[in-house]
Image 1 (cartoon, helix red, strand yellow):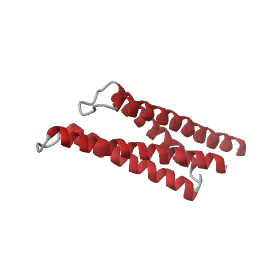
Image 2: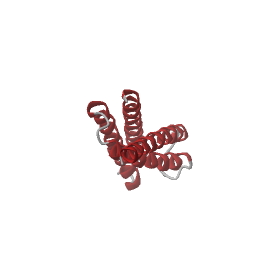
Image 3: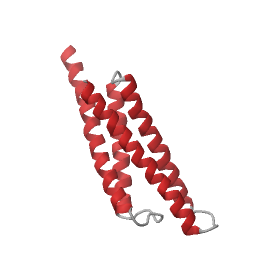
Image 4: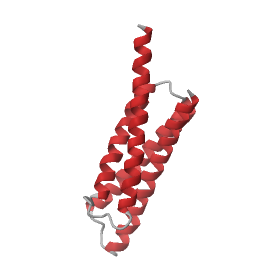
Length: 138
């Protein structure tokens, strides 16, 4: 049980840190590229979205470490949601869908896709374990 909790918590911490770092990298890159002009709206939105997502994912990972897996189905669903978001963002970075992404977005995209897949795997396993336990009790 601790191994699963440790793995899920670590995935949350790593995923959150990746989102925060990428969000922080977008902000200075765009402010330097634009000079004194105001950053374009999509860059600001994406940077703050990644920062917020990273903080939420990181806090979820910390909560899994501190409180354990008491609400395993909720944590599993959150991990699935975070994994899907990271997959979408990672594919967007690789395909350069976002106009504000410059060098390094392919590497960031690949890392986000890998962490997203691991989050999906962990989330599905948590949800599956919860459903299996409920079926065994009936």
